[in-house]
Amino acid sequence: MTAPGSLRACILLLGAAILSTACQRQPDLVIDAAQLFEPEQEQRLELFHGLLLDDHDIDYRVMTLAGAPDINALAATVYDEEAIGSASSRAYGLLLLVDAASQTVRLEVGYGLEGFFPDAFVAYIENRQMLPFFEASRVSDGILATTELIVDRAQRYALGETALDESWLSGTGGAGATARVGQHTLPDSPAPTGPGRPARSPEETLARYLEAMANRNSDPSLTIYTPQTRAMLRDWVMTPAQMDNVVSSYRRCRAQATRYDQTGQLAVIRYPIPQRRCAPWFFHRNGEAWQLDLTMMSEAVRFGRDNSWHFSRGVRHPYEFAFADWRFDRNGFPLE
Image 1 (cartoon, helix red, strand yellow):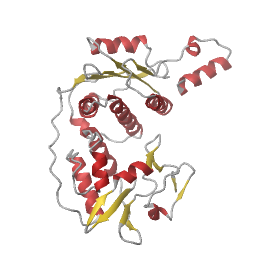
Image 2 (cartoon, helix red, strand yellow):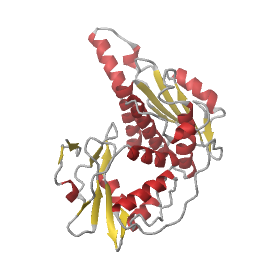
Image 3 (tube, helix red, strand yellow):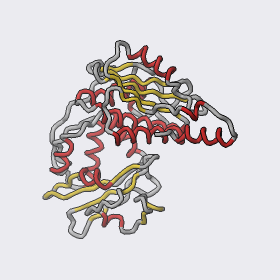
Image 4 (cartoon, helix red, strand yellow):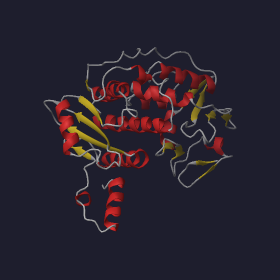
C-alpha cells in the first residue's frame, strides 16, 4: 500500500513535471520476514503509518525477523538502508524491529523525535508492553498494540500534555535499547489481589476497576466483571503499559451522572462529548452487585485516528437507552 505522505510527494513532483526515483519506488512500510501478520493486520499497520505521517510528520516502519545475531547493529543498518525518515519533511524516522525467534525488540528513534519518544518511554514500551505478548506467543498482536501506544504518545505530545504523571517517566534505559523476555529493566508489576467483594453501585465498580488498573492487576476473576467479561479476559493479554494508559486517559475526564434503564438492571457511565478520549462504560446488575460489561463495549465501541471513541456502525446493544439525547454522525461519532 502506498503511504499517504509518499503519494502526496509524488503528486507534487509530477505536477511540476519532475521525474523522481521517490515516485518510482515506494518505501516498504511493513517488512514481515518472520511472516507474523495476517493481511488485515498489515493493513492496519500501514494505516497507523499514514496517521503518524499525516498528523505528526513521523515516518514509522515495522520489520519482523526470524532470527538475527545482533538486533542492535541490524537496527542501525536497516534504518539507513530503508531510508527511514525519507517520507517525513523533517526526516523524523521511527523503526520497530522485532525478532520473533530470540524474542527481542528494539525501537530505533530518529533524530528530532526525542521529545516524542524519550528514553524512559522507549524502555517502558519494550519492557511493559511488547514482552508480555512474547510470553503469550502473540507477537503480531503485541506489535499492533505497541503501535497504538506509539500513536497515543505522539498525540499526547502534540497536544502539549505533560508527561509528569505518566508511569513510563520513571522507567530506565536508553532510547533504542533492546529488550528480551526475562530481562525487565523496570520494577515488576504487583501480583493479582484476588476476586474481592462485590461492588454495590456502578460508580463503585468503575472506581475499583480503575484502582485495579492503577495497581496493574490483570486478574480476570475479579467480581467487578460480568461472567462473560471474565471469560473474555482469560484470553486477553493485558499489559502493564495498557493498564497505565487506561488510568492516564480517564484521569483527565469527569463523568456525568449514571444513567439507568427502565428495569434498573443496566447502567451507563458516560462523559461529556468534548472529552472524546473517554469512552462510556457499560454495567449489568447481578443481584445486589454491579458488574462491568466489557464484552459489549468491545463489540460496540471503536476508536478513531485521534483516539476519539465512536460506536461501531451496525452494532446494536442494550445500552443505547443512555444515548437517546445525543446525535451521532454516519460513522458513529457523537455530535456536540
